[in-house]
Image 1 (cartoon, rainbow, N blue to C red):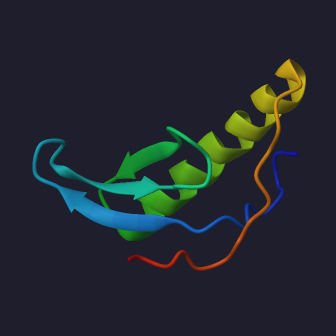
Image 2 (image 1 turned 60 degrees about the vertical axis):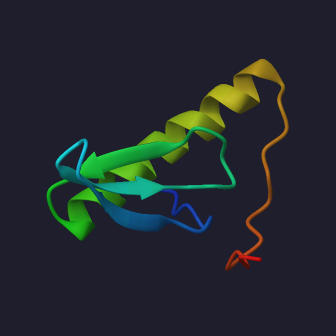
Length: 73
């Protein structure tokens, strides 16, 4: 599973509090990572997302299917 591409939407934004870019995966509750560049934040988020999915599987919890681009109201 380590080289599996995560297909869930990732939102990357700057956090003044963390002084880093945050890469959040909204469809995977609480799944986020940081980095000093957009690519670093995305790479770290992919690692965390794989771990999130692996843990959910081990616990028998549902894994949300990627819905694609999220719409904001």
